[in-house]
Length: 232
Image (cartoon, rainbow, N blue to C red; front, side, top):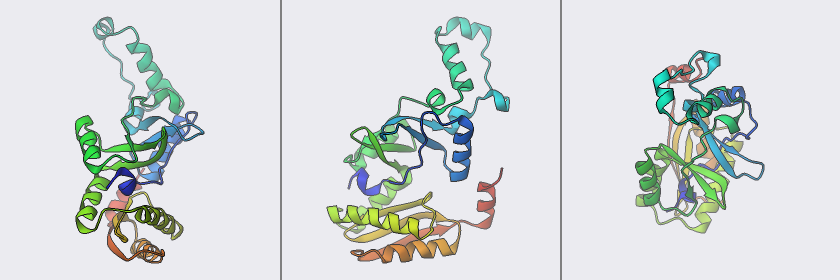
């Protein structure tokens, strides 16, 4: 099983010229902690995370290092920090050194990458272009599916794309959903906001031609959790 079999292929992205206000709004609206920055051709340029937006003058959180740290530091440290905290666009505040994997990376290789770099998710690239993201949860889901079913085939990968599209069209929010297909069996994991979304996702998956079975492990978020997630 490879990255292409477990990755989330519908990735929310921003352009290099996207304003930081719009990025912050995108993170909040989509309830995600980071967003890849891609150019018009889909090439990955960097990532903007919540951490990249923490130290901003607008919120009064800008860091002011002491004079002796400025003397001991690299001459470029201060202007780079200024650009990071005052930059108005994704290209100015993003983290450029992004760890990534290819779509043919094995689950073992992905696990090693996540562990070695102490990160929670990794972008998946094809010829330098972003095609998906694999999180720790996606990795675990893949390991479970691999134990339950044969290794994914080319048909399974086509089914995965069709199931994801069907779920999207059914109105079940894809942000917290993970789809893995192995041996024609669709494994659905993650969480949705309502029981109707959960049912719609299952029915959509079952309706895709070629799907042999659907294992629905989707949870419904309690009202108290939903209220916290949407809190300003």
